[in-house]
Image 1 (tube, rainbow, N blue to C red):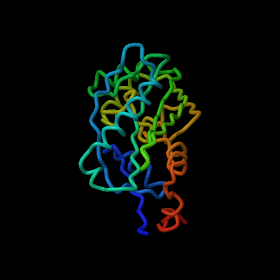
Image 2: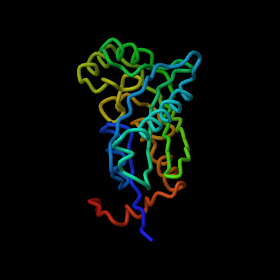
Image 3: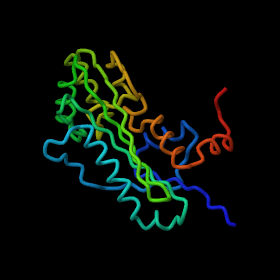
Length: 212
């Protein structure tokens, strides 16, 4: 009987998500970004949007020729992160004004970061989890905002900031998943992979670590 090797596909080209997987000793066999419409639906909550987009990315990646070419034993991860202020969905900032507006709204207030991950297993089963992290920013001065805008870390980031960069200096309080705020909740990701039969620990045992 021929053993089928497990293969991991990440439906994203995000260097942040790739780096997070690397932290836990996982390297995707294929990066297959899934381009889908991320426009929120009417009355859609931030949490529901994150889940819908993560599932949509995984579903779309499943149909990609490169993914189908991997054959059997394929696990597909789709992920998305949404920043919410109450029921309000903050955009992924593409312009200075987008980021400035987001930071002004977040200044001195708590917000929620919803980071969903969807796993499609080789058996076709779909499972999704969503981390919910509460983040509180200090009150931002005009200089805080203007200086941060110049560093360009905000571009393309949900809520107009990247917690893994300079914006971490704005965080007074965080309760939940730090990796989820970055873009991929690691606890939820590993739980899904293990539950679906992906050999996470085998990868840990067969890779060397640079940690002392």
